[in-house]
Amino acid sequence: MKTTPALAWAFLFLVLTAGPAQAGAEAALDFDRAALPDTVADFPGFQSRIFHEGRVFIAGQPDEEALRALPGRGVTLVVNLRTPEEMENRERIPFDEAAVLDELDIEYVCIPLGGDEHPYTPTAVTAFAEAVARHKGPVLLHCTVAWRASHLWAAYLVEIHDFPVSEAYARGEAMGIGRTPFAKFLDRDLKMVEE
Image 1 (cartoon, rainbow, N blue to C red):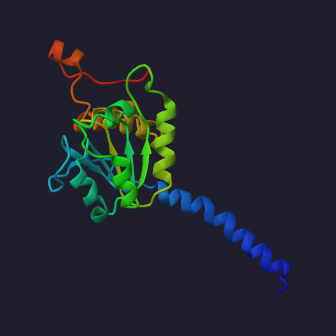
Image 2 (image 1 turned 120 degrees about the horizontal axis):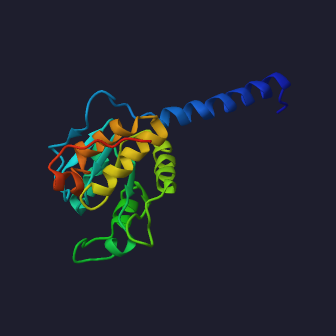
């Protein structure tokens, strides 16, 4: 079959224009910037509360039953922020999360955060953003009790979606960041500001 130059140019145009548009659609979060995250009350099996921001669930550690319920929620990606040492502790997590998700055909990304070996860095935000951009559907971001997850989520909103630091941090506080020990010691509400 002979390809005409016009047909070749048309195909190249479609490839070049479809790539970025598709990436943008995959990265869309579909949430209301003016509203704080929703608490999800009908999703049992998480170590702490679970929150919903558009297509992203932010939570603590899910049990195996909760993982097996993810396809019913349309989840196509799980991002785990727990360290390998945490995940290998079978007294606390009596199943292999990666194996369960592989069985369910859900992509599993581990971005370990915590301790000297797994520091909090901008690289973690980039890795999370890249993973989210690959998926059009719902995403689960979790750690142990949603503390690290809510911090990473707030940083992601600042770096990728141009949220002001104070606004992103307030969203994180509504989920898992909570009041800092510093604020508790002073018994004051404090705001995070960027200099």
